Image (cartoon, rainbow, N blue to C red; front, top):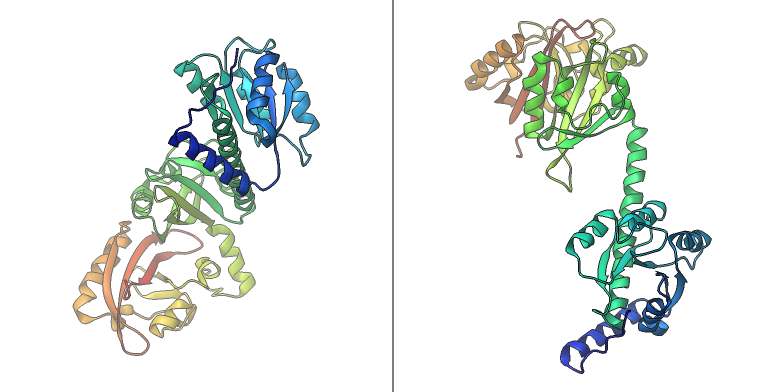
Length: 403
């Protein structure tokens, strides 16, 4: 039997009452609506008495009756703010958390507080794992304490639900994205793949969950992809992915850290096959057909394609902004040597030789920009000489002067 608890007239009780008064002020004049689910009518009456005028109490003696009450108010303005649930209901397993899970599943927006007649840490943990916001032992709380717990639970649930709704909106945006999106841990383990990326790979969206991103990267590009994942600073590289049918898919892979979760990584995967076709629509360098043009036209990084000797075949518009080099195929045949600080020329030549054999190393050096000033840059190259749509060494160059 649940009994009321009268707090002793001490400072702690006074502070609790003041807190309750502040909460009443914060909630305005609106009364809480609490659904008490307990087959013991006397216990339900005591809970109603403890809440007093602060809440309107609806009661149900079975789980089925609780669902009927919740369903009747589901979309109404007076929907229950909280469910106080006794686990020993006649239509549920004795003292189990099944009823908690059932309510949390069908009515995820409504917080559940379990009211139990015994202290059982194991059962309490089971109830919380099933979705309960709190577990209270009958007779161990008073009215202000119960009211405060209900309001805190309702606020936590409200915040949680707003996060869920925001997450759903973000997922819908990701699902409609025109590029592949991958989310994962700092170790490179996949936690989410959007429909676009799953389609590119010929996989179900769940097939990659729990597996490393590198598991779908061509063996020769493993080191490049792993370097992007380790650094996760927003740089990109051209790699090949292996589709479910064993075919190769050339892509641009960019990896960054999630802004609010440094241990979570975000990768964007762009299919370069589609970009190659777009080149002809945009009339960008028809002769060489470098599909990177449409992809990087707005990028601040310089994307350039070089032959085996390092001579420019094609370069993005950013080369004009930074170096004064003409964009597209107009720079074909030019050498970057004239733009590189003499002390760094050999370092650049070593990098080109490494890129030519498939080593996607990063090189730092200095170049003279279009105004004659010296700028610090970093470049990374990817051997795409055998790619039919590119046929060169693709080099990404970033200005790091202000770093």
